[in-house]
Length: 353
Image (cartoon, rainbow, N blue to C red; front, side, top):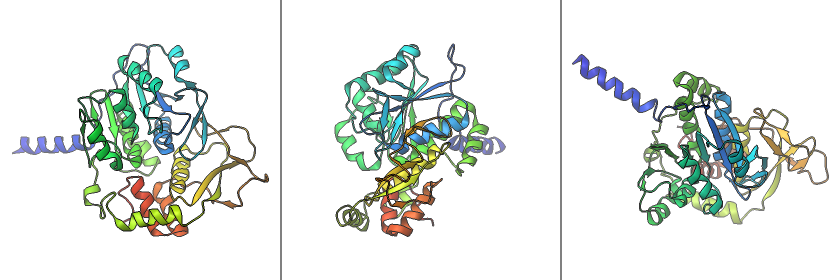
């Protein structure tokens, strides 16, 4: 009986810890090399900045912002980020390849040079990690053939129809199949990023980083099935989507930024307010010079404070959690708009129970 209880406790522990394979150091890579990939046309900002910010907080890996091409990564909100390297320069500097490549959702999911680069990185032994509909990029690259994977709920039917050689899972925050890892919708970037920290640096380090960002659980468990209404099947939500998009004029709103800003907070605030379809979020700084984040990522301000084109309306500052951003959106635009934004984030924690 004691043995049976011990086994049960062991399996329960495994369900919530160490769900990704641990990092296996390579010669010259005792400290893993992580490339967070971004596209110059449009890259989902939360998919990009959350893993970047979380892994940088852990200080357990060399984390680089890598552009598919050129020097600038453009986010879905319009924010522009300076890349550390583009893919070609990355190959020159690190011919052995990355240990992890993180792939956010990108508008150009079939960009041939990007697909070829990912195939080459996988061939060199990198673990390829998709966030949200970054899985569409992986699917087009062929890296998901014969594997289990997941992505944003809204593309589930499309993926099942167009990529039938992949087993598409639902109601799971992330899944690992060999050296390919994928996550569900946007908010799943946080638990997956913490799971990566655990795989690289251990449970204690992941717990410390999680405490710093206000997260208690980073398991792959997803409770969308118990969330009422279920993602994407609520008439009121989509009526709100229609009225927000077509009955209101998009208003520019300034987001004040200063040197040392937190990457995670910038992602949540910029992304959530942009998704209301009622505000165009513009980063406002004291000068037009690139502004370095807490961990050295440089963004290009959209406006200069006090200039003629600076927005009259300003947000009070960065929201450090998605709950904070949604609460402010509810107070400004109404609870239904906040609920719709939460659905787009595939975030089961809103509204709070």
